[in-house]
Amino acid sequence: MAVLYGIRQIRWTPLLDGGGADASATAINSTKIQSMDIAPVYVEGNEATQRGGDDIVAIIKEDDNFLGVDLTINTAAFEGGLKAAIAGGTSSSDDQWSAPIDDTEMPYPGELKVWVANYTESDSESTQDGFILYTFNFCKGKLGTQNPADQSFTNEQFIIRARRNESNPSDIEPAIEMEVVATIS
Image 1 (cartoon, rainbow, N blue to C red):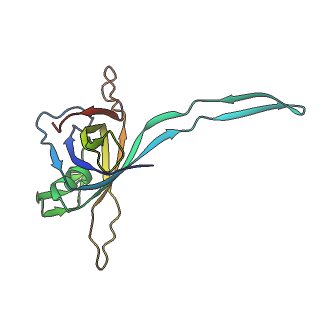
Image 2: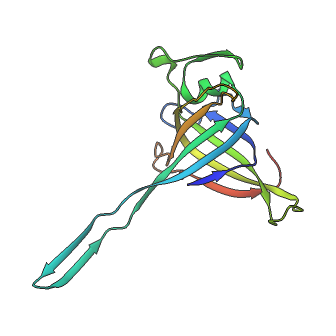
């Protein structure tokens, strides 16, 4: 599992229920992300071994099938609007959130963009050389665990599944895209 630090900004853009772009949607930006874990998800191919006598006659192995990635995002502060967009429910401000109470308050899928600082050298004198932009095209999120305790911070956690957007068969988007960019746009 890869853990990304140095996240400078994320942008969650709600999509229509089927995964298409929503012209009336408002993107939500956050700069309060501590870390994000990326775990690839595969369906393992079947394997069969045929034996004859004391020998192996044939081994058949199907290829593994890449489905997408599972993300775990940890935030440094409570943001009600971001929480409502990813996990559902309602929020009238970034200081307030209420859990979903019926199907109308369940979250829509979203597109997630993540800008991570890019360094081309690995020493302490290295300067930032732009950003790596991760784009997760079709995401569905839910709440992760919280662990409030004495003398520690209460951090938000979201579990997000990023998969291929197959809502438009003529233009299937990948689950994850990465590119080096100069600025946050």
